[in-house]
Length: 342
Image (cartoon, rainbow, N blue to C red; front, top):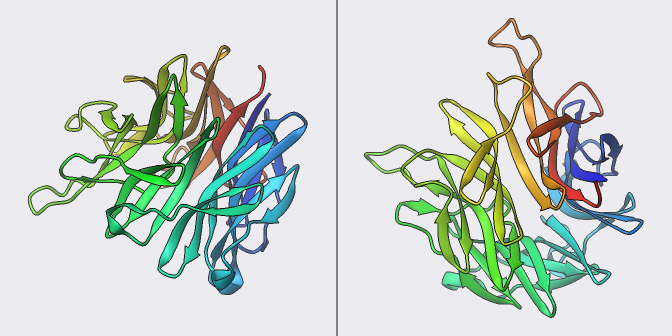
């Protein structure tokens, strides 16, 4: 089965959902009038675990970290002194029946990187560069070692990972900053990979602020293509048989195209309308092939170049697109993908 987590628009409100194969299932929110997102999904035996965020409109859209087990939502613990302030849950994994969820809560100085272990808060107190704010996004567990990736937050984001609570800075090339988007982290054969993209800094002579997809292997930066030769995004990453896979998009002219990289080899994925654009967000590789989740855009009126677009959620199996069902005729987005058997 192929499972995906994401959101589907209903009356312009994002509703958290998941898909099992092509069937969509709506998830509960803390406030039905405010948007929510399912960010990550794991199927383990008969149980479906999902991490995400729903928002409270009454407090201006405060995000609240959520965990759904078999559709039942639990709002995750926040620090007692900041029990009504922002929190988000980005990734869930299940290891030896223990449920780990990476994300952030609000502390005295702003976002604090954390993970929840079976619902209990674990703080990542070590923030590099003598900082006070950071976010955690992804988590990987190997035996007794817990690896968490994220970003230290200053005027911009600086990518970092923690091993058993100790922070390690991930290097940035001159002229680039990090991003606080998901930074998937995986271990393979003793190597630690972190996936993501860089943000080009604007200068007085160069206004280019586009992104460059990369990964770090044991702390060494590997661009997916030379930094001076194009732009793109990377939101998802995994390792299979020692090969890193990245999922995101490659910028072509004014548009971006859904893309998966096998190490540094780029593969453009088919869209509903090749004249529009699309995005991939997560990738799984196994003995059955390469599975990628995302969405592509469709014009509501193909005869009108100014017509509104809607996002159609999908996944690709070995390069072939499978479109998914939606709650309404508005847009929907498939973010994370998990494959049990195929």
